[in-house]
Length: 193
Ligand SMILES: Nc1nc2c(ncn2[C@@H]2O[C@H](COP(=O)(O)OP(=O)(O)O)[C@@H](O)[C@H]2O)c(=O)[nH]1
Ligand SMILES: [Mg+2]
Image (cartoon, rainbow, N blue to C red):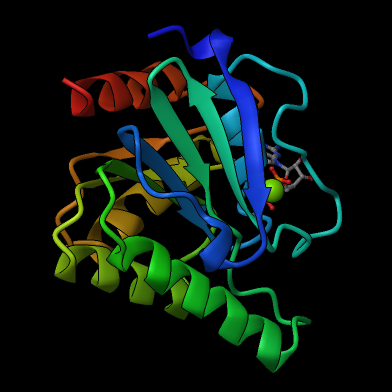
């Protein structure tokens, strides 16, 4: 797969605007500021195809990218405290409608910050994916921010915290060092076979 050949397709603010599935889809999900745009840019080998924002919570749209006959779906980040109740409801409705529509979802890349325990919203998302029987991997983001000792600690802590779930893989990732990038790309390619 030509990961460096991605093109921006479109942004959608409401579920109604989202076109029917015409291609297999790879979905990226996580709380806002977890490093989703950075991960996308890293695996797509681009500086700013997916905008990296310093102020979190701005992505309230679903963004579609395409690589040939494959679609990458960048879901809006969740768990941003300053967002209004109605925005949160809009988010929830969009996510639910997206996953409940008739799509060809091959893999979800669920991002969790490696420095912290999964948030309540992360757990809700993992439970949702499990219940829907959607295959997913977990990318533990910002791994470069941990020293060796912290890295080991967090890795086993998160393994424990996530023991009740069944991701295909748990992959430490850093947009800065590039750690995990190849593994995530391989998991995506495998899901499309
Ligand atoms: N050190 C480090 N910082 C990161 C990494 N990924 C993202 N960041 C920073 O975290 C912030 C949020 O990143 P962004 O990709 O916009 O997160 P998003 O809201 O999930 O799309 C930005 O300041 C990024 O520079 C990483 O792997 N390592
Ligand atoms: Mg973003």
